[in-house]
Length: 265
Image (cartoon, rainbow, N blue to C red; front, side, top):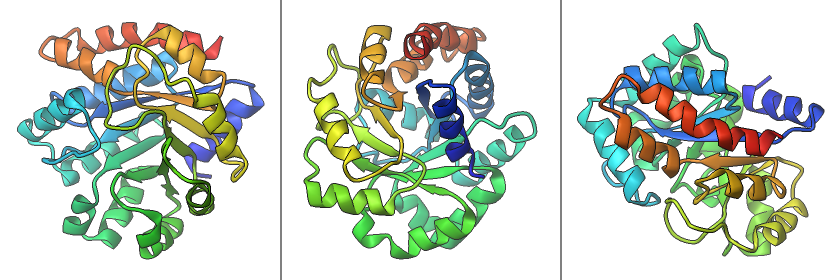
């Protein structure tokens, strides 16, 4: 069974919510990313999203844009990222989602990319700028490889398109709780409950809510409405501050633990 599906089944049986962390791969190095994944898994993170470094990350705010730039500067490429994940699989079974822009798939070769991701031990792909209306070949190849097709929904997604996305997705639905790009926010959006209820009309898939969650209080609030929460920019910002020091893994784990506790307890 796909690790993402198995994780949400386990969480449901345990009556727990999931905690997903986003990291910019290769920020500040692939070795650090690998150490961070292992540290976060030990801390109780359920799923890790790794952003594949890209020169034009249109869905990302400044914090994650800078992480992508640092990933590029560290020499992180799609092939050596997949090799790092393959090595990681010898010691870790935490589900891994790659957060990626379609240009990378197009350049690499869609079929080859999906095959190589599956071989490395990736569990799902979130292709930010690939709409389901243009994804027939992609979805077929993903199904053959046993990978989850993760799609975004937003506050502006109309009901008919929610239905389409829900029908085509697998693994979980990623609900973008705010319009615009990624980034830390002072408050969570007030309509998360209403929007997740609308999404549930169309699907039984777990809903993960992200974009803007940056502290334990926000995490606890959002977890009441969703099967999982995603924390990205707030963690990436910790890496930006501490990434040059040997203590970076401990600093990130210390930051994340109270958020995990808020979601789990």
